[in-house]
Length: 114
Image 1 (cartoon, helix red, strand yellow):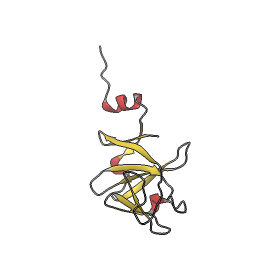
Image 2 (cartoon, helix red, strand yellow; image 1 turned 135 degrees about the vertical axis):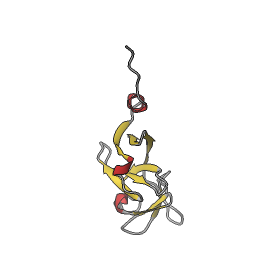
Image 3 (cartoon, rainbow, N blue to C red; image 1 turned 45 degrees about the horizontal axis):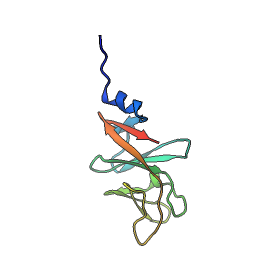
Image 4 (cartoon, rainbow, N blue to C red; image 1 turned 120 degrees about the vertical axis):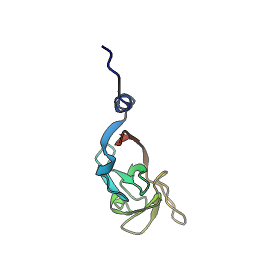
């Protein structure tokens, strides 16, 4: 008998870690995952896209996971900086970047490569 690997099994073999179901992250919200390199915020857009980055605004380390998600950006709750979810870059005129991480959806599950 041959066992077939699922897409999730294949992803795990490639260094991806299953975090949660997409439905566990509120639409236009975030979930925080602890890692060796600090907290990582995983964001969900209105279109069910997922993005991940350090949970620190490049301005004054505000908790981005507590910010407002709009389009493909999040606004820091401390000083209103807007951060691009896909790159971690601050939106002009602000300058700075928070580290993004690879994240993807497989069979309704959110996988993170950190």
